[in-house]
Length: 149
Image 1 (cartoon, helix red, strand yellow):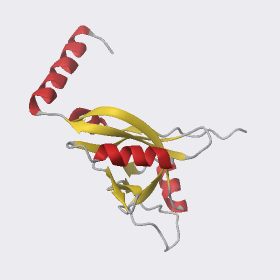
Image 2: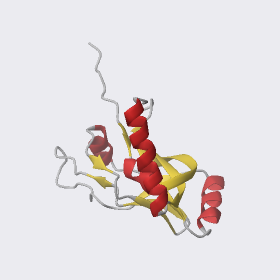
Image 3: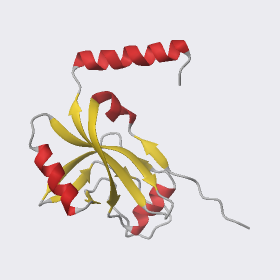
Image 4: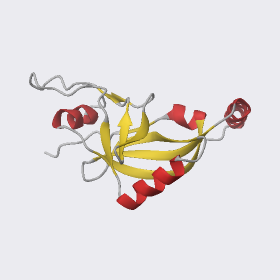
């Protein structure tokens, strides 16, 4: 009997409301065993997370992964910094662009690929002004009234 696997694909909707996405990258995550098991159960939250450079390594901070309840007494810390795995060329490019004023790196999507690896989609983003957010709300309401999806 084939084992059906639940697909994990979560987006950060708050980030798309707060930022304009300039470029997007897909990065791997350096995780512990209990962390990947919690992600496969869907027990994570990336709404308040952000990325930063720490010792020339890109890390994601405030990505909450709940402790795995079937683990031993040695479990992971839910809010620890996790290293993102990107090519050196992409890291240098992000670090150069991050020096521009007003740019940040925001996690937009967490998913498990077909090989069973957890991937984090990140975006180089520029913050929206208040009037841009109003335009976003107005466009969303117009689409809803027209019945567009």
